[in-house]
Every structure is written in C-alpha cells, then in structure tokens.
Image (tube, rainbow, N blue to C red; front, side, top):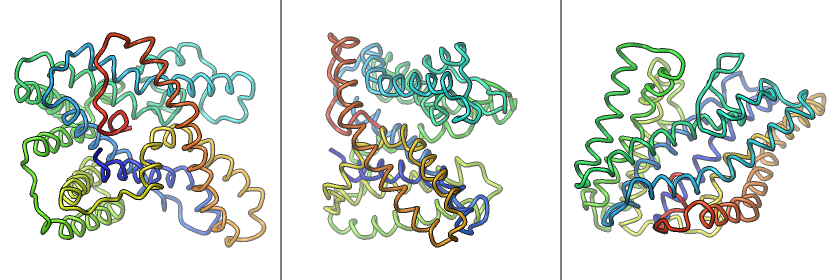
Amino acid sequence: MLQNVQALRGLAAFLVVFVHLERLAILAGLPAGATIFGNSGVDVFFVISGLIMVVTTAGRKQPPQGFLRNRLTRIAPLYWAITLAVFALALVAPSLLQTTTADPLQLLKSLAFIPYARADGAMHPVVFVGWTLNYEMAFYLVFALGLMLPGRLAGLALSLAILLAAAAFGQIARPSGELGFYSAPIILEFGAGMVLGALYVREGLPRGAAWGWPAAAIGAAALALMLAGPWLWPQFDRAVMFGVPAVVLVASGLIAERAGLVLNQGWIQTLGAASYSVYLTHFFCTQVVTKAAERLAGFGPLVMWALAPVAFLLVAMVGVFVHRRIELPLTELARKVIAPMGPKPRPTIAGGAW
C-alpha cells in the first residue's frame, strides 16, 4: 500500500470539489474563477494513474486482456450506475439538470466511454465529470498495447511513444472533436506517471531517511505552485501549469514515504480509498449546497462562508458511504461476473488512480 499516494488521491478528489463550488464562492464575495485551481486534482489523478499501472504490473506476467478486464471491473460498475441514475433524472426531472439531456445515443456513448460534443460544445458524457474516465480508458488501451511486448521496458517505451506521438499530432495538426480530445497535451501526464512508476520500481528515486523532510518540503512547494498556476502562468497549457507540479508532488510523496514520513492517519486513508466515489458523486452534494446558498444569499457572505465546510463534509460523508455500500459491492460483483478467470489485481492502491 502506497499510503502517501492514497492520501494524494483523496487530495485530488477534494480539489475538484472546489471547482463545483464556484457559485458559492461568488455568493461569498470572491471573483469568478477563484476556484479554478481545483481543476488540478484531475492532473494529479492522471499522474497517479500512470504510476500505478506500472507499479501494479511490475514483476509479473500480465496479459493485455486480463489487464483490461481488471480495469473495466474497477472503473465501469459505479460509473455506469451513476450514469444511468443521471439519465433517469434527465427523463423525469430535466429542469434539475443544465446541459444533460435524455438522449439514448449519448447514453450509449457515455456507457462505452466514447467522447462526444454536447450542444454547448463541451466533450462531456451524461455524467459530466466522466470526461476524465474517457481519457483513463483510452490510456488503459495504450498501456495494454505495451503489455503485448515481451519485455516490460519495451512495452513501456511503446506506450510512451504512442502518447508522445498523439500529443505531437495534436500540437501540429490542431484537430477538433474526438481527435482533438485524445491528442491534448494532458495525455502526457499519464506518460510522466509511467516514467515515475518505472523509477520507483527500479529503485531510481532517492532513498534514505535524510530525504524525508526535503521531499516533504519540495512536495509542499509543488502543491503551492500547482494551486497558484492559473494566476502565475495562465498562458501555459494545463499539462505544464498543473501537470509538472503534480509529477513533483507525487514523486515527493513516494520519496517521503520511503524515508518514513507517511500520511497513514485513518481518516486520510479512508478518504483516499473513497476518492473515486467522491469524484463521481460530489457534484450532487455541491449542487444541493449551492441551491441552499442561493436561497440564503440575503443573509450575507458570512453565511456563504459557513456553508463551505458543510459542503465538504457532505461530500465526504456521501463519498465514503457510496464507496462502502455501493462501489465495493458493485466492483466485487463485476469481478465475479466479468473476470472470474482473470488474475486478481495486486492490492497496492484500491484499483489504481481511482
């Protein structure tokens, strides 16, 4: 168990919560865009995903089909359940939703992890935060191609080459639509995580107790730069603005843990384990709190500030509940149905980046 990485998963999920509390922040007196830094949570997730795919497949033979089967059973069940729930809501109470419509074709594409453009131009599935999962599933396919080669280094090199070629194509051709989606620079964050994973597995990262506090300090600085990125260098793509400090942050967590500095408190690890559920359910909670804030706006900004911790507490409670009562049972059921003959995933971090 990479406990510091588990903790970073929790951090990443709760960073994203800030993004969907923008309306509350505005009612509290902050300017529009004040919570944009929360988008960096996705970039941390992508770096962790690349890292964990390498770590969990190192030192053992992993057939591509088994790898993809394990990934599908980990990612799909909860996402499909929430997608169907949102689609049902769009059918019976469309006024509660904004750009989500009860379109059967869009539902099928969402369930199949196929990106598409909504009426507003956004490449968002039925569950709008699921755009990140479209990237995840595409990365798993790329990683599985690497698993087809006999040597692990050769396989990693192939996966990295595909990611680099796709990003280069995106920068040169500037395609739109699905091609533009899959060739955005953000895909390089998976590759950076893979390199970090290879270094970790091959003992290429600094080791020893003396590295503990320096790594923690570097990680804290990277986190600060990542959160301040939208104001320090807004001209850069998010792969630079958020992705580079995210890589340093994750690397620092790994080095600090090997030096004995571990975020192993129970509540931190619990939130880290529940991060996937938090990510997929938090927008329900933020919407409830935002609606309440709009009704209470006449009481002044102090009430809005008081609602912020309420929102995060609600997100945490719902996320942990869904993780324990829905996500884990659905995942276990999927493994029994979809992957009865496949190798069990290595128990490093609950399922990888999520």
